[in-house]
Image 1 (cartoon, rainbow over the protein chains, first blue to last red):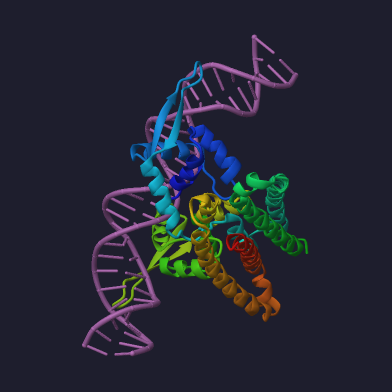
Image 2: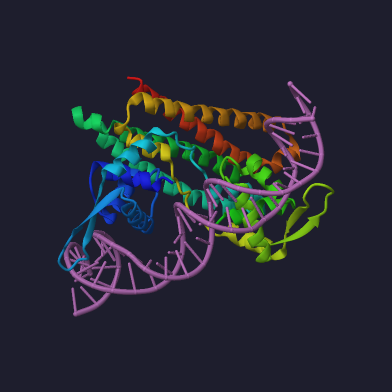
Length: 177
Length: 177
DNA sequence: ACTGATTATGCAAATACTTGCATAATCAAG
DNA sequence: CTTGATTATGCAAGTATTTGCATAATCAGT
């Protein structure tokens, strides 16, 4: 399982609470790793018990206390071991394609409507990524160098979305006939 | 959950055993829906209990008996209901990208080796899909028309793999510096 | 003052998926 | 004649994820 390792990649750079991590997932890994708040909180508990991370209570008035987690030496070693081990190819489970495969049971206009709905989501995602790409383009020196790898993961998102949209045009062409 | 619905899309066209379905998943939906034999057998049992499919024993000598499943009326209705309902965007969890994001903890040559390993898998997949595309291109008339939607799902695979490989070149360029 | 979004955490139950094991026959190749 | 691949099915246990519920304060807008 790799939610554990995704969390550690984020904690390695900076300690944080479950809620912090939820936000970091959305902002930084969201295009290629999606995790819900329940997954994160449950996983943090398990990882804490396993000694991969430690926890410091940040007592706040009024608000519930924040639990700030940080990597332990054992966690760091586990992360490095994972990084050195080959990872499996991504598992793909895309219900839109299953639906399209069985689309002869549906009329074209229904399929078209759904494809277009998905298309607008992908367009939105692409715009956001393009925006981040622009911000990166304006960086210089060490700041830019430090973000080289995250930038490459962003490029994966951009190229992936472009391909999705190019495909959607082929689908639209067919369904509008 | 949609494994259920993927199975129904396959059973709708033709009845089959768990093993048949396993093969159909690999050959037909494999590029966008992956299911293991345990998943399929367990799911068939559940679906049978729920009355979505029925089961006929095909007694064979020597070999274990085949259980041949077919759609029931209730299953057909459930499938149609699912097809008419909008589906969620695909959930993406790609550990290679998590690894790359945290790649500053690793040396470039290690990352490069892993990316190249994945690249060869994607190249292989693309070749297979290209081959099926060629076979489709030679079809004519009704046979071709019947496969129009499966062909579009194949196109998704091809465009997706091409984008993946284009991205891999950017990554290699950076990692070879 | 109220409403709804955001911050912040969590339990419990249900559902889904993976891993490891297990059986057992047929068939093709060396 | 034996080895390994393919056909064919499944249990049991462990791990992971989803869904629904629950609490409670702050902050911005109306």
